[in-house]
Image 1 (cartoon, rainbow, N blue to C red):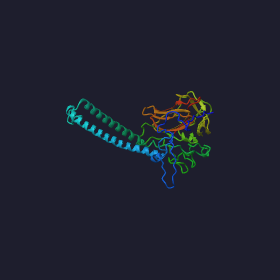
Image 2 (cartoon, helix red, strand yellow; image 1 turned 45 degrees about the vertical axis):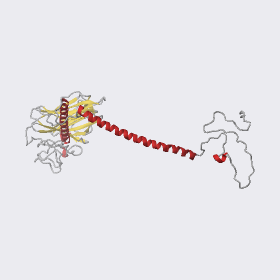
Image 3 (tube, rainbow, N blue to C red; image 1 turned 180 degrees about the vertical axis):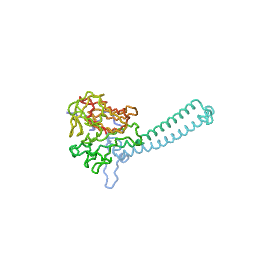
Image 4 (tube, rainbow, N blue to C red; image 1 turned 135 degrees about the vertical axis):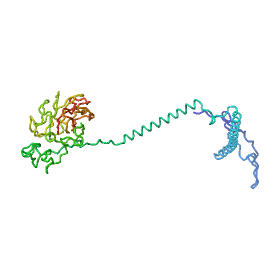
Length: 413
């Protein structure tokens, strides 16, 4: 239970601790005699009439209303406003005095220190000369760099001009397919003629009438003639293009002079034109057989197999650095050679050159995974006794067991 608070004899409660600020204690009001008064007479209020409030013990004299307190604080801030104006005026005077002091100091030191920058007609110093030299060097280097960039851009955007083609370097496209079955009518080979030296009316795509013009029902042949160039006869020539590879080709039609095909009956087997000129030279070497070609190769005048309706066989070599080397004999006339090669997940390069010298022709194939096959159309002219040298070799492989370069066939017309 809380302790009972002590009380004074006159019934008042004492204050505990020091008296708060603003509080005043007063003793009991002295007893005043009560006098009777009549209605209408003024009442004597005594001290209350002078102070306007009754003095009570234990109460402070501060205002109780919030609005009255805010009014007191606002009055104090009004006095601070005058002080702020006084401070601003003092700052303006200090800045003006500082500027004036700087001006007087600069006037005093000017005769002693001299001008901060040399006059324009003053002699150049070593530092100034070195700076001027560096500026000139930078300007020259910038001009050289810009000139080089402009020249490089002009060279890059300039379209390469093709070398002029002579009469024997016209583009060669694959000839049209011969009749179904790969055999000419009347049991004749596409290049055979009738006994009276007249070509039949329904002859093959590469046969010509005795006048040298294609027959009426013959597709125009776009192969280059097997004769010398009338414009520049006898001049060595070497050119190569990459032609699209169709689904089927006739070696008999393409190899009017000679052709050769590898594989089909073992890694060392090959077929050739039975009545060929023997212009194709193959030194041989270690080879493996494959049957993954992308084009069906046909012939009707071969040996030891006289007729083939379609084969994709060929030979290949494993690993980087392996190659196939072939040769074609020259005769002084323009010759067209078609080379059918491939790659098995390898990057390869075709090197062509003439044994008599001159600029070689090079074609490259980038490294890529998978089996890819190509038809290269080579036009060359070499003197009798000289040769066209062909080398198809693997540069890099992806690392598979059978990655390398492949060889299928070659034709000469």
